[in-house]
Image (cartoon, rainbow, N blue to C red):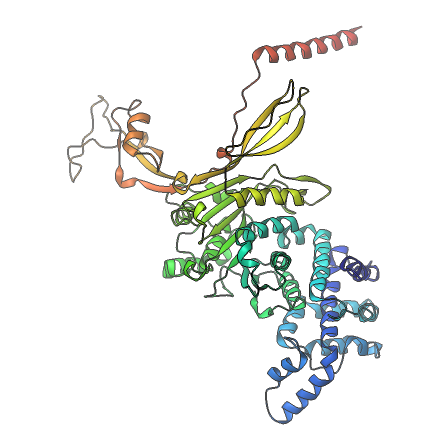
Length: 611
């Protein structure tokens, strides 16, 4: 049975739940039962040996746990004499027996069912007289690894997660990233390391600080398995939402991963992987969510630990914590001397430009650009996510840039790479095709400048689109048509995003127009600045302040001067400006002709009505 057929079979349990459960709540029954049946099948062959081992070790007065793990052949065990099949033999006591069976699991498994709040579902199913029927349904599925390997079971579980995410837009938006976006990010993460990752026996670590249901980690594992079946990816993560955490941890358990690597709690205030570093990282933190709940802990770490902590560069405004996740990930990068790290993070437009020189946001951007950590920023199409239609960007960050990328940032406008979905899901109306993912990956992998050429025929219709690489010739225009070129991938020096904010002062004058001079201190005898005339100018870092001042300010205010004590350095990344293409307006004659045509048509309609 393939994973689609198997997940459809499991999904058929929903028919039993209809009426007693809302469709959006089916997952709270089906997902934990699927996990339970899988674990039930995994432990079945060694069940008798585990029970015998426990009895022997307890008689000897020893802690049986390490012995039971070894005997079970898995990273977990169960000490109950029950299993799902035996539960069916006592229908009247199925609720209490199922609860006792769950209590027999080792701690990491009990934690999963507690976060699912599965005991509440047992009570609810029992009251609805559905518990026996649902248990019977799952007991009839053979999910032993011999029948359903880990890779296939992972796909089954992901298919179910996706179905429940689609059934509830709220769940989807908060805890589910579209699979094609994850695929793109994973491609971008691994594309420059294909040679290394294809070597036999390679082991790499990956981390997601906002793991959700574990989708990003799962796609990364699949990608690496396709590239090199002998490679091993150790996955770690942290998640705040209890149900998402339970799903993620269950998914990792099903795939044979060490579930102690999945931490529960708020990543920003309670780092579940303190001191750990990783080869790769992926994250889709919540957009524009305030961090007031954790402000006390975050500020304390920033002030007391500085760059020894996670938030040394600065703190963003409390209304948007996405840059806090970015800094958290910077602190988790494996040092360059130990092989380095690359990570991808999805952010909205705000972190690119919010905050002037000296603000927390600007200082974070400054730290990243002056330390040459930003490899690329890729604009995604709008309407890509379930809970928002806003513009989003993937940042690729690395402390081991290849030589051809050092000192620069690549910017890719991927906003035009999309196809319309057959059916919208919440705010998600667009998706990336495999071809789009390949094209964006190629743009990143080549690290060259490129344009997109739109071929327009004589009727004004677009008939083709083609990527034109730097140095290549654009396609020929069809007869009577034209070719429109727009930037698609650009390279910028890190310093191109830096500027100095200078404070321009003008002298204060009395009612007679005479200069007001300072009477004391270092400024004695010098003109007093007039705060009402004070202004600021942003001067690019690559340009001299004096030359800029002489050209842009003095011709308009010859008595102005710069208060150098107030000069600040800032960084912003005006993404849209770098890809703006000026479209000249149509000739006036054309506009006049269109207006006359419209006016004549309206007049004719009025005459008809009058007649």
